[in-house]
Length: 447
Image (cartoon, rainbow, N blue to C red; front, side, top):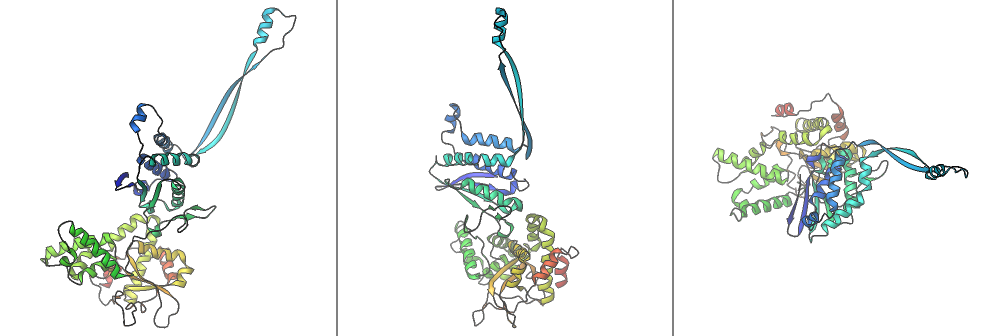
């Protein structure tokens, strides 16, 4: 899906990567190039067509569409036939007719055959400068800031992500176009260093803009979400919707239940309103209604998103999640846990999988750097399980770590006392195919 739209003096070329996620490289890149070139404006397009003047972008689009349907590699044979004239020697005593024939001479045909393998990627590399020129001339014809936005980039095959980013970065660099890639941090491979560096590097080639609101600073996240809901309320005639809709504790409960994710915030809000109407509680929203609304956005829904987006990692991540839930809710009976910084350095791949659970909003970071109580040395990162795992239905005999509250020393309540989840255990759970993937039985057991 691609579309070009104007917002003030900004022209946006929006491309949804979800439509191309099943394509292999370089076909996925060809599709992206076609989408960008199709959205580029051409001043005087119809006049040029009438006058049969060349339009570079349209020429490239036709070639790219033809290339898209070609084999990735093909044997190409070129045959070159040339005629060469040869003059015969003339006998001075020959008849006039013989002399004329000798002067005319004979022709010999020579065939030359060249064979080579043509690759799609070679074509794209040879014409990169041509595509860049077409884009620059097209955008230069309008007085607008033009931005190419590739959304859901993480859905593309991880092994081809650096190649796609590398080409787009080189294509749009030094042009009037700007590249924005919307993705999930720990499902994205920005660079590959072997056998040569391909891709982009943060803080060197590109800059990261973090759009996520986390539970690290609950007050700031709640203020942002409150502003969002009040802004929506003003569109339908409510000046301060948040104060009219929520009781004093409900807004905090909704922020916690959503994990600070705006989409989940609005979804849970909708469900909570429906529950309130169904039960006759229409005065305002309470934490109880929020938690019941959140139960409809349970882990099953988020698990479905993980299954869709994680591809080959799904089974291992589900085993890891099940083991983590068992560790927290069954063994330790607490809703938060710590990861040792030393563990993260020793087992970076396993720590990355913990981060992926965070990307899927199944866990949330609450403190990136803390110490631990009970004489446990070192530094730790603190996380909480998503509230859907323990708030509705409410798990019995589980200590809910109220990390959003602080003690008299301004330390988050309960965080330093949280148990340490060993990454060696996480690594084993991820790899052990005999362990259960579905945590449903575990959660029912903890009821």
